[in-house]
Length: 206
Image (cartoon, rainbow, N blue to C red; front, side, top):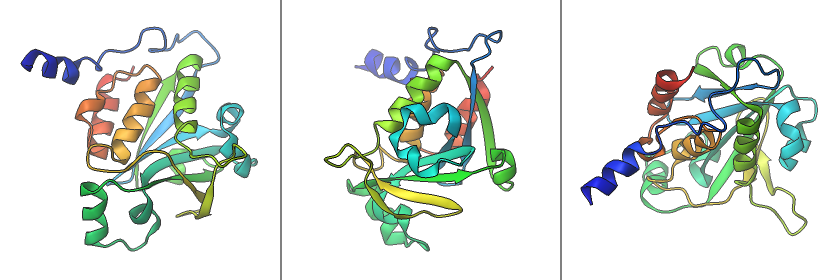
């Protein structure tokens, strides 16, 4: 049991060599960005590169960048939040939503007071990440994302998401899984906070 636990904690810290690191001589590598919002993280994708694989992005056709975040349905959509909302979100499995925000400027410029970490991915790794994000959207009978309402800032929307939110499947765990799908050596079993994600990105990226 101890050996299994150690394996789980360390087994996902190696890169998936087929996808990461990207060949620096290739011209189709893609840079994504991870934003630290304090309690949660968002993943910023270049719209033009991601949109062929994301039907939800049809709502933001003129955007240059799209930031995607996943979280608890009530807590994420409510401002201001309450302590009870946070407790309920962590300790009871709750429904989830996806937040998509569109903007034109560089993510570092758009989020001047946030920590933003760029991550260069191979083309294949990027597509894997985008597909994981796309598969997080709940779809209606017509196969389209389910819109819930206006988002938190700028041009943004909330959508119904798949999966239940709780302490061990929170917004940062979701981000880590998406990042891991690209081949990047992030340890998804030790991620609970946004600071941990940022630390691992800085520790392992080329």
